[in-house]
Amino acid sequence: MAEAQTTEARTLPYVAAITEGIRQVLLEQENAFVAGEDVAGAGGVYGSFKGLLAEFGERRVIDTPISEAGIIGLGVGAAATGCRPIIDLMFMDFLGECMDEVANQMAKMRFMFGGAAQLPITVLTMAGAGLNLAAQHSQSLEAWLCHLPGLKVMMPATPYDAKGSIIAAARDSNPVFVILNKMSLGLPGEVPEDPYEVPIGVANIVRPGTNFTIVAFGRMLHEALTAAEDLKADGIDTEVIDPITLQPFDTDTVIDSVKKTHRAMIVHEAVRFAGFGAEIAAQIQELAFDYLDAPVARVGAPFSPVPFSPGLEPHYVPNAKTIAAEARRTLGL
Image (cartoon, rainbow, N blue to C red; front, side, top):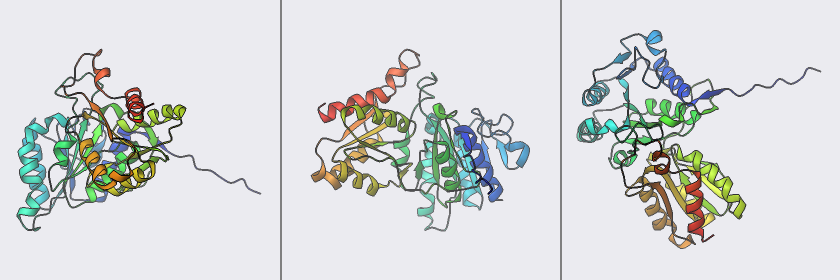
């Protein structure tokens, strides 16, 4: 009798999953192209576009001048006239350079032309602190984008979700920002070889639990999972939800969890004040107030620019220890 054969799951680092997702989009869509600073010759400053120029050529993988306004304007115009561009915004901090194109053109054009203009544009950008890149290269500004009707916003935390989010975004007929994380580039994870989508607007219950809900996105998902293991010592069975998509937000999954656990916390790397966690907390109190046994807690960065100092930056960015401590404070432990 022949032995049953097992296929070992394939593991890729986060950065390679990004590259593979982009490559498969370019293979699938003849009118797709990549444009951004150093994406072609250098393969991107993080290596996430490595090898694409050699495979697809300079007409589809394009190095641009150092002008974020020009890059986003290129993407908007190309999308409106029939292409499906993938635009790289090297650092999320550079949104300030092109916010007029994003807020007043990209987000609004489909509505202002009565749907006649489609904008199938994917914008990839890197967010997050932890690499001592200082205040102008370390921010998490997802709340800016989520406040703009007309945009979709994804924030994948794992290699699987990074690849699937890029493919889902590129297949969508609306502008989609895929916010990636610099500190996660080497993070390994299982990634299928074939193309697949991570559904836009569908959250993932990463860790089921019964008496505490943590909603965490981006790199904070991994810190929240570590904190959840720490909280087991106090008898707290924590459910951890990764929204993956921030806009549109999967409210139902979060509310169903809170109705079960009766307690909730939101964790993000962005500044706590007016961060996206405040919107989630507001939705919880509006839709599940009678189920809450404790105030909705929030964990985020202090209201300060990201410090450059290697000694200060680890104290600025939330981690598993600060998440667990806030959970215990909220629960009166």
